[in-house]
View (tube, rainbow, N blue to C red):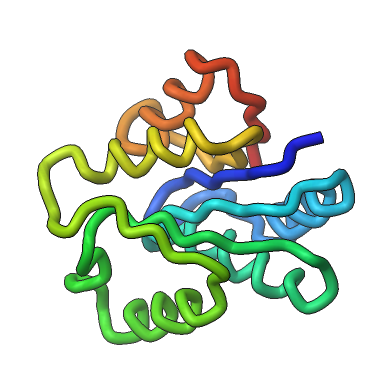
Length: 150
């Protein structure tokens, strides 16, 4: 059983084979298998998609969504519609963990390590061998975490 799940995936899902229904099924299977806590890094793209899926299931299952925000003001440069989505998701989180009061180089990687260190299973959407998602999946592999690729 995996009590706590974290998510990592690309910010830009355009021109990829991203399948939100597959993500929904993976999350539902985890819930039915006993997962109770979901850690979300709150980045655009995959993170927010995963958060929306967990929120959908919160209506029928006793699960918690935890926002793991790398730094205060993470959403400052998001577009208006992305800021609105971010705000709606935050309102539905059971807990918000702001890991740094301000941005610093490397704060996103620190957030990613925090989530891996505090999860039992990582759900990933990885399509490139570079960037934050690649870094996070590699870190999870090195620490022996279970990884579910979507």
